[in-house]
Structure formats: C-alpha cells, structure tokens
Image (cartoon, rainbow, N blue to C red; front, side):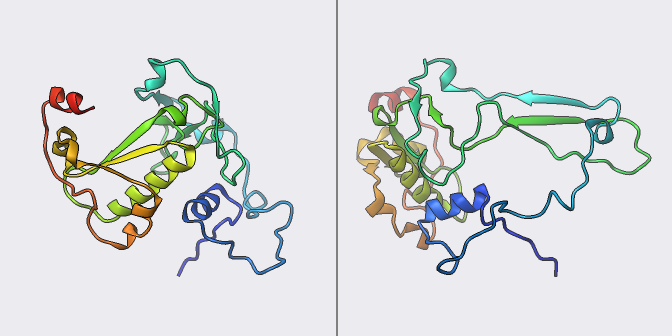
Length: 214
C-alpha cells in the first residue's frame, strides 16, 4: 500500500493541533531539524512556466462577493497572531491543478484561480463588535456537529462575544425562541453525537420576517 507522509511542521498539522487543543505527539525532548518539513525540494525538478503551460493556456481569477467591498476596514490585528497558525496574504491565490491528457496534446486549457482561505494577520471587522449565527439547512450529512463545534470555538477564540445557533433551518430564523446561545460548554462534546444539535430543515421564509427578528 502507498504511504502518505505528513509534514508535522506544516500549516495543516498546526491547524489541527490548535483547533483540537491536542498536545504534541513528539517524545519529551524531541526536536526537529532546522529545515523542518520534508525533503520534497531535494527530489523535485524545477520547471519554468513555459514547460508547464502549452500555447493557448489561459488563467482566470474568480472573485467572491465580499462585505469588505461595502464597509471600510477596521484594520484590527488578528488576536491569534501569537499562535502556531500561519497567515495568508491578501493576494494569495490557489490554482486548479495543471493537467495534460497526453504527450501529444498541443493546445493549452483554461484554469481557474481562487483566493486562498485561511486566517489573515489583519482583520477587516472587529470581532468584539460582531455577533454570529450558525444554521444548518437541507438534508443531514455526516460531521455537521463537528462543523458547529469548530465554528463556535474559532469565533470565540477570535473574540466574538455572541454566537447564536438557530434551530430548525431557515424557518428557525423567524422564531426568536429558536435562537440559542452557543458557547464552549454547549459544543464541547457534540461532535460525538450524530445529526445536528440545531436540527437541519428545509424552508424559505419571507426575508421581511427574518429581518424583523434580526
């Protein structure tokens, strides 16, 4: 069976350790070498863009609708900057994998780029002035409670003081009694349970009714 290597000093390992609050797996006193990570560079061959992209290749960047386009930035330093998390730059893009059907292929393809997700060193909004609401809609799928748990914990870590869970899907948005407070104590062990503690449901209530509750 093919074995996969995990970079214990990579950003994905760091995120897992931080979000799960797990202790390090290394024995006491163990230290990685200064280079860290894997030796992927030593076994890789550098290629120029002309070696990768065939004539006619085009790359399109897809932007997302962003609330930051409508509201001025507060330029708040990320409260997690002292943690092990690595930050993304504001101009860091992820490209689709470059593919080639066979060696005889002579014309390039079209590829898309998306902004990389991940924490940024400067926040557009001040978490202390924000509130968040989590709602699960549609059919159930595995891992919903784990998602609710991680969202709640991360929002609290950022400094968001109020995190709501809305029970009953979008229909719950219009019923004030279905807005419940989510905190670390409430979500600590919900990932061990099936389904969704917020009850996933379909529904499309009139926006005016939802706005009235908001």
